[in-house]
Amino acid sequence: MDTAQIDESGKGCLFFGNAHVLNLTAVPGQHSVFLLETEIVLDRPGQLAPKPGQFYELRSAKSAVTFGRPISVYHAAVESQADGRRAVRLRFLILKKGNGTGELCSMQPGENLVLLGPLGNTWLRPNGTKNAAIQLEPFGTQGKPEVCIVGGGIGVAPVAYLAASLAPQSYDFFASFKTGSYGLDNVQARELVVTTDDGSVGIHGMLPKALTEQKIRDAGYKVIFACGPSPMLAYVQNVADRCGVACYLSLEHRMLCGMGACLGCTIFTKDGNRRVCKDGPVFDAALITFPKPDAPHNVQPEPASPKEPNLGVDIAGLHFQNPVFAASGTFGYGQNYRGVFDVEQLGAICSKGITLEPRAGNPGERIVEVPAGNINSIGLENPGVPHFIAHELPQMLALQKTVAIVNLAGGDLDSYVQGAALLEKTAAPMIELNISCPNVKAGGMAWGILPDAAKNCVAAVRSATTKPLMVKLSPNAPDIRAVAMACVEAGADALSLINTVQAMAIDIEKAKPFFENVRAGWCGPAIKPLALRLVYDVVEEMNRLPPQKRIPVVGLGGICTWQDAVEFIMAGASAIEVGTATFFNPTAMLSIIKGLATFMRTHGYATIQDLCGIAQTA
Image (cartoon, rainbow, N blue to C red):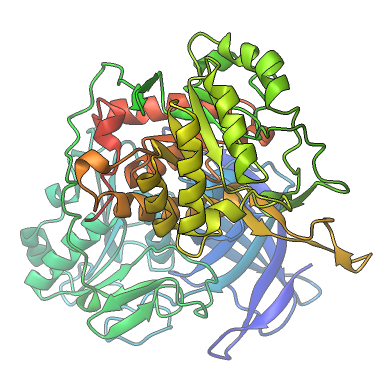
């Protein structure tokens, strides 16, 4: 059921509600462009139908994404009904690019869309009048069109809707694509010119092959309307300016509200800050300053190579076949997922947190799902170090290709030291020292909050073992940089971060905290931006040390995809750990390994070291 909202100008009501997908078809010849058709009913006199240039925010009603995606109207037809209401048949061209558009392009007829709109301004008149439908004479004084319309790629949609609103033969239309052509069904131009990068349709080349300064002067255009990728728009802006021709551009930007309230899509113009969603998306080209291309990376990738990249990494004297590790507490001791995939494809497996004495864990409820993650209060349930050494460690060591890392936790300093001393006598390759668990009452996170406490704990364990020691840090520390440097000074060989974020939940029926310990650990995709920032911060601080004193950083926290892994490695992580993602996608780590290799091969990165830390600005 739709609801009406008054738009900011007070001139009408917007549509917000559900609508059924009527049709969804792949555009012929395009592997990632889809045509979606739906219909909304306007049952209030003031409700607005879309005008050329406007857009709707769309998302699937069953979406896993939070926000709608701004999609320009490609075509709209309004039909009055016998009961006085108006039905608006809407068509959208959608480029499948990310999660939100991917969901839209995978919908089936009959499924529900959530729509908000129409949003944004319309194409402007040549005299600059805003928010009014274009009104141009069909022909100029010499009997030829004075209007030039330009569309590039998916940007053809809003200009095709503009073209359909004009008299046939009253404009020329230039369309530029990588391959093939689409979105031109309603274009009735006097001259239709198509360019393609691969020469599959029309002129072989990009837009400058067809729309030149000389062409604009010879045609006598008085105004140019354009939408497409930024490099194309920058070219159109430049050539129109040289010819003294009015020019209007429809811009694209990431958005949240779409209503002009959040200021998230603000761009800087020559007339000050402007919101793409409300002051645009159509702007006078003279106001726009396109950013210069990004400066080259400090490490330049080589051209794509058919050779497979080397994913191997070396940390604290140990070699790992790839940088993807199973995080502690999410993979047992390596045995749980052996029936799903070959776990020896992983770089390492971090054991469940082990304490000196057996622990039964926390009583009561232990997990609650929250948006994009979970809060858990497991409480380090484990069989104790002696039992682990006798039973679980041999299973981990039996893996020939995957490094076994023992996650050691403790309640007091003595238990840490005794646990490390027992592990010292085993063949365990590495210890991950857990000083950051947030859901136990004794010990745990307390050791990782303050630099002095962390230093004392790491130094004590260091004196009890010669094994490589990786210290797991807490995001709850007031100054994680200081804690990290204290661990380096105390003898850590590597750092891993972050552990879970301290959080809580309330049982509203019982009016009491959900967990008996009240506070618990929050993890999952939602914490990834925080984890990424903290990894970046620690690496940034590490880089201030002399090279011989620096130690590797392993990043974790909300990593679910190979793109996430690339971000962490570019931030400076030598390797990454994957946890919660395995719960909803047991083969997530395999997908990350494969995707990481593909990314490196196609972008010319030969080794993980070529990627590591290249996003650091210092």
